[in-house]
Structures are given as C-alpha cells and as structure tokens.
Length: 78
Image 1 (cartoon, rainbow, N blue to C red):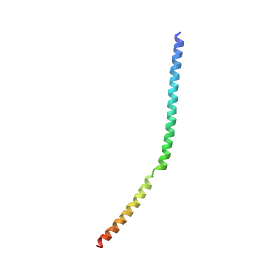
Image 2: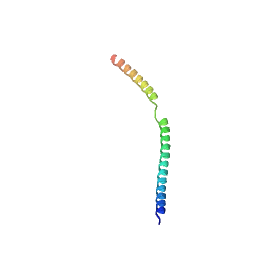
Image 3: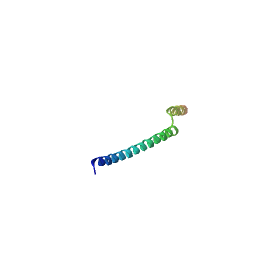
Image 4: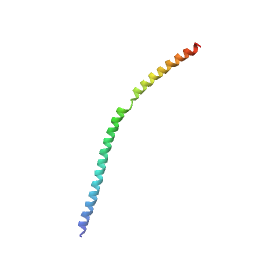
C-alpha cells in the first residue's frame, strides 16, 4: 500500500472523528440553549419579584406593629 493511500485513510479517519465530535458538541449546545430557555421561563413564573416581596413584607410589618400596639394598650389597662 503506497504511503499516499495510507495518509488518505488516516486523514479520512481523523476527519470522521472530528466531524463526530463537532456534531456531539453542536447537539450539546442546542440542548443547553433549550434548558436555559426553560429555566428562564420557570424563573419568571415560579418566583416572586423582589419588589413584590418587599411590599408584602412591609404590609406584614405594619400588621405586626398594629398587633403589638393593641397588646401594649391591653397590658396598660391591667
């Protein structure tokens, strides 16, 4: 077998292996993009925005403060 044919077979094998690796990487990137898109949707739907959370905490603090004021008034009447 002449050296040119051996070289061509070697190049063909390396090229095939390289193509397979590139295909696998391409599919992995496509899957990651899909996962990131799903995660972004999940974050928007499943979690509370910071502003909404702070508003809720302010309302809770106000209610607790009113309860403590009422309890203090009741303790003073004893």
